[in-house]
Length: 346
Image 1: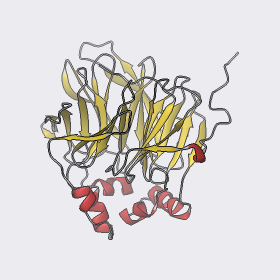
Image 2: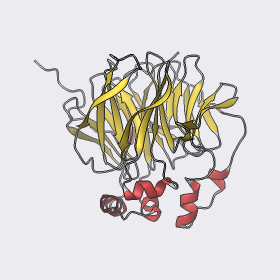
Image 3: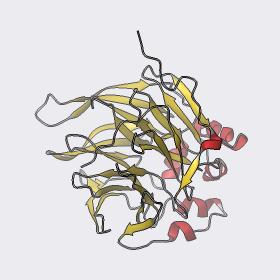
Image 4: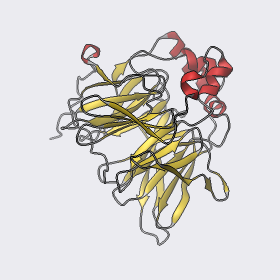
């Protein structure tokens, strides 16, 4: 007999949502340590460390205030806010506990020590600029998976026109190499509990695909057997994903600000709807037909985690869900009926 899904009948109680952090800048991705410490990507050029008691410390080599000070009163200014300067995006712990940063602004993979010292690990691949680096993931074999959304600049053009030039690279004993390409704006990736399948967010798909890891050859891991997982159209642009211990894949829909989950069978569940209605519907219509503008993107957002971007399980029992965002200044969190999969630590 199949066990009941813990998400059966569950929706997020908005009155129970609490917040942590203050005056954050673009907390797109969040790492949760076992002791309750959070590390949030910060547009000033590093991460914000939030201690269990709420104390904050910015960690980075230097402070870059372009994101906070850039005007966003016109479409061009708003677009520049998200296309210029340093923009730490995806985060992962390396094997020593330092932080890997996919920098969406500088187009490189960085490594930041816990004292803020930062160095570039990769900014080119096959002799070419690496492109719009989005997310980084480390697996249990210490391989680093890197997603590149597009090589088009500005990226907003690629997103609006559904350009299909995103790719996935891996760093292992064989070096840095592309293992899959031809994606609609590659975003976050996650491995299932057994690390047999890599689940891939195609933001302008808008859907999720998955590929099986093939480790049978001498040249290192390959990705094979690409297939769609879940609906072909999720109703909004997917951004961040995370597995819970039952096998549900939680997923944020950025700009339309919804949190959904895909069951192990690929069925879609709506967990939280913070959409602002008509602007969100207009954005999706125009993204579908390739006519979306930065102004359309600017208008569509909710209030809980505006431009909801990531989902992270934390807390002592991994039942606390933190939501990252691109426009928020604090991090909302709530309790889940099911624990998340643990992060790969060091």
